[in-house]
Image (cartoon, rainbow, N blue to C red; front, top):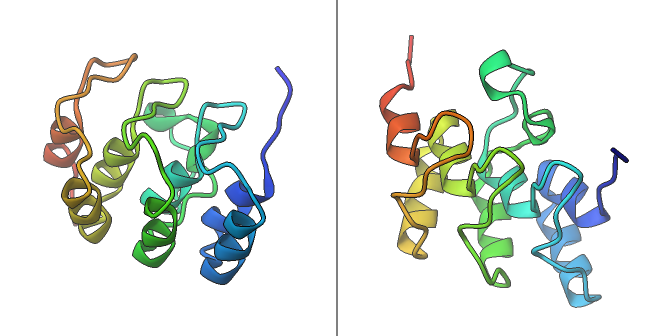
Length: 134
């Protein structure tokens, strides 16, 4: 498998809202998927996380969890429920990561709650319910 991402993925992962606006104005495709099926919204919706055996998708490495980048992308997104290669949506990633502001934003924009992933057949609600805050 070939590793690839577009500039819009990196701008989303690093929470460069002005860069996102510039890329979108220049015609970047907001629904573009990387080698793991992650879109820029996947990156913006989830927290920066260390590679985890239970959450090993390549898109977890650079995810930001910043609501401002999420808002920039939501203005252009066509499908809030697009899945990565493991069947996880942006809402699932945000729930798993405990980013309540991003979860609220995605829900207000119409993200689907009852979407099952491909691995554990869980929903974003399962992810939120299993989150431990120490």
